[in-house]
Length: 183
Image 1 (cartoon, rainbow, N blue to C red):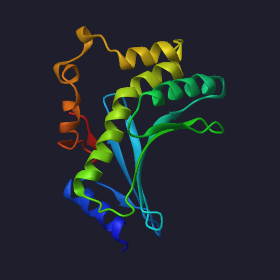
Image 2 (image 1 turned 90 degrees about the vertical axis):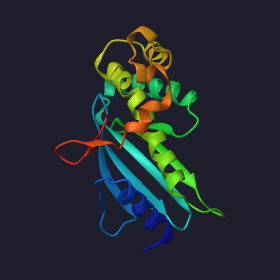
Image 3 (image 1 turned 180 degrees about the vertical axis):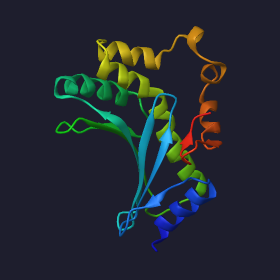
């Protein structure tokens, strides 16, 4: 087994993630439940390019009449993101979030993988509800993004109010299916 993929597998096992390896590939598949919905996630390793990538696919697709609204939503969301980006497939309406690392010349660590995956999942958690509002509501994407990025402190729970502490509990609890979920 290749070196980077072995490290990703070691990380997933150490953190007690339930996952499966895609046969014949350096790709693993797992699920994650946010407060709003369930994500299908993949860890993809390209040994020749020294890349590690995590993808989280949202469980809905943009219908043709909503594709441009979703495109505006993901473009506006991507503008302020430091780690990763949203992607939209214009042909089928699928939306995912991607975080990646180029490890060439370095050494992949448990902490680097932890930071990469947590950045992915916490960003999906943050924007999930807004994406649903754009897909199934009548609000303008700019208005939704503003609300996501400037939440009203009166409507936030203590964890959200005080910053990134929300990602600390991601791996603490699994549901009946063995998928990880938000506490």
